[in-house]
Image (cartoon, rainbow, N blue to C red):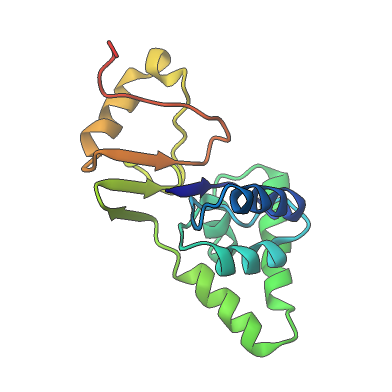
Amino acid sequence: MFAIISDIHGNLEALQTVLADIERRGIEEIVCLGDVLGYGPNPLECLDLVRAKCRLCLMGNHDHAVLYEPCNFNPPAERAAYWTRRRLELESERQLRAERWRFVGRLPIRVRENGILFVHASPRRPINEYIFPEDVFTNPQKVISNFERLDAQLCFVGHTHQPGVFLDDPYF
């Protein structure tokens, strides 16, 4: 058994609460679907906790924005990306600064293991495509296209901040 976390966005208090719950449940393996960074006031602390606690962490669009550039972000999200980058750059301990940058820079965009695909956004566009529950009705081709690209039995996706289950059979 493993836990899935995603879209932490620098919110240390929420991350600590979720990690405590995972520990109480006796779950030892944690996968993070990305967006450790962005918005919240504690990106470095969240990054350090995820590095220490998660077996696997993927790159989310906010992590990507800090590492590269915030493309197609709204103004507050763009400011948060630049602010977070500056926090990473200002770390006075050289080795810690290098370890954090290396960790973010090496985050994979998709991982397949044991018949499971892990992505931040979607199988088709793993960094930034949104898949919402209503897409089943409003944009079924997007959902179908993602299932066509799915080369696993199961896929875990973060990004939207909305729980949901999509099946490739509309008559489940």
